[in-house]
Image (cartoon, rainbow, N blue to C red; front, top):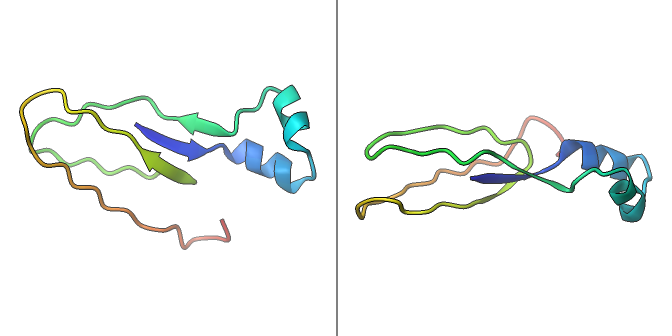
Amino acid sequence: MITSMNPEYLILLMQGYTVAQIAALGVAATITEVPQFIPNGDYLRFFPTYGYAITFYQSTVAGVIRIWVEGNTEGGE
């Protein structure tokens, strides 16, 4: 599962809205992606915007999980 900052929330902050005003609009600060199952020995690549957390659970036999993390260098975010 990947958790990211909500771009809509960040845009409202930059437009001068307060946290209370944004909450009143019903805009969440974060987005949690739908969990995905990664089969043993498989590789998946994710491209989260403003991602800041990865949550993982072991559901079968013991193994190794490798996570590669890169910073976004495309813009000012």
